[in-house]
Image (cartoon, rainbow, N blue to C red):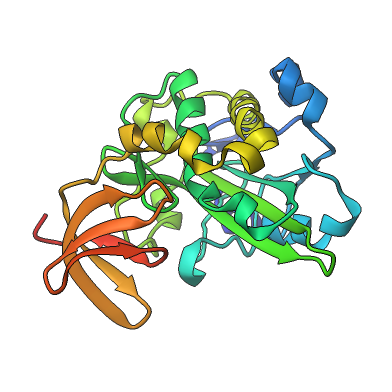
Length: 289
């Protein structure tokens, strides 16, 4: 029972019978996922790995990139070393979240510019298809619901000597995140269990919806680029006009979020220096918002 607690599973004792999980587990199943895939995704997808436990699905795929073609997918019920941006830990209780990584190859570095924003569009579309309203996007790679963090994207890149680049797209979504496991999260968060009043969409179906949308974007991304999706990203963006602090290296920059450029750069109307463009940084709304 202590081991179950370590995995983040909640349970209660029933007198004379034993123990009962607080909520049923829906196991990840390749057959169930493939059954919901579109014809486009079916033809483009590679191997689907499903693990009970991994350190990180991104780490797993990055380590196997050379042996896999575009479309390889890795999923895990539980991650021991899941990672978010800027070194943060991504919490993932057993069977409670979606921990998905997918590999895609690009021929040069410019071909995947702005990809994290396009992936955000794919996730927002998938959640909308699953009946989840109120989803928003935060620059550069957070998925929000009514201002609280629902999920995130982590892209990792490895280059080869002859010019090809392996990009691993990591997606984490909170399905059921027990409050006891979330004490270390340093921002407002939410899970689909809360959003749907205890009736979240099937994990297997939602994974299929995510893959369907990703395969709508990735095959032609090297030709179309972010410009094909930046208009839709702006429609999902929910923080334009808000006061924020951008932690850019060791320097906090205060200002008002003014949107993003066609190339995916953050536009921040800075308190000092006027309108600035930023390619990276940790963006947080100011407490006086």
